[in-house]
Length: 335
Image (cartoon, helix red, strand yellow):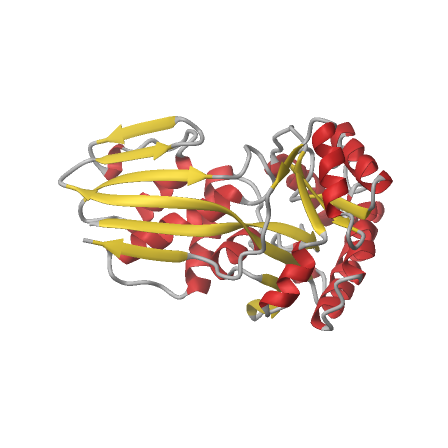
C-alpha cells in the first residue's frame, strides 16, 4: 500500500506566540490569525515486509532501522521517529518526507510535516482520528522533540487550511474560518508578498526567551504581548468584515510590538527587506514565526505587488510564489 499525504504551511499575520501554553490561557480572549499557504509539505508512506526507512529529501537525510525500538531517540529525523513510535505500525514502512519551504523558513514546515505523517499513519491503521485530536498529538510530540515550549497554530493551519482566527481557551482550541470565498482569499493574496531573508531561524530559542520573560512578569514583555493580543483581535474583526485594506496597518503594528520582545527577533536582513518594500509600494510587514531569520510577509498597496517583488529580487532576496491554500491535510491511499 502507498499512502500520500499533503499539508500546507502557514503565514502568521497576527497573534503569534499567543498560541504557546500557558500564555494562551493567561491572556484573556487570545487569538492568532494565520493563512495556510500553498507552499506544501508531503509524505509518502509505502508498506514493506519489514524494517523502517525514513528519507528526508530536502534535508538529504536517511535512516534505516530493523524495528521501531531501534529508531534513534534524537537526531535530525527525531520528529518522524517519534510519530512512528507513537503510531506503532504493524508492518514495515518506507517514509519519504518532502518540504517545498526554504530551510528555517518560519512557515511551520516541520509541524506541517508531522501533521501529514500522522495523517498517513492514521490511514494505514484505518482509524483516522478527528483533526483536533491529531493536532493535539502532533503538538505533544513536537514539544517532546524540541524539549521546550511550542505553539499549536502551525499544526492547526496544516490540518484545516484557509485563513483562520484561532482562539486557545480553557475549553480547547477554536478555529474560525475567515475570508471563506475564493474571491476574498485572492483579494488578500494579491496584496501579500512573501520573501525569504536568506537566514534560517530557530524558533525554540527565541520563543523560550520571550515566554520566560512573560512568565517572570517582565513589564515590557507583558505589555508588548498584550498589545500583540489587541492587534490580533482587531485583525480578526477586520477580516470578519472582509476589510482586506485594514490588514496592512495592523500587520505593521504587530511587527512594531513584536520586534521589541527580544533582541533576536529582528535582523538586518529582515529590516532591509521591509525598507526596500516600503520604498516601492508596501504598507509594511513582519517576520514570520518567531523571527530571527526565515521569511518576511509584506502587505502592498493595491497594484504595487509586482513592483515590490521585482525590487526585492533585484536586491538578492528569494521571493516565494504564494497562494492561500483553502484546504488543509489531504490523505490518499492506493493499494
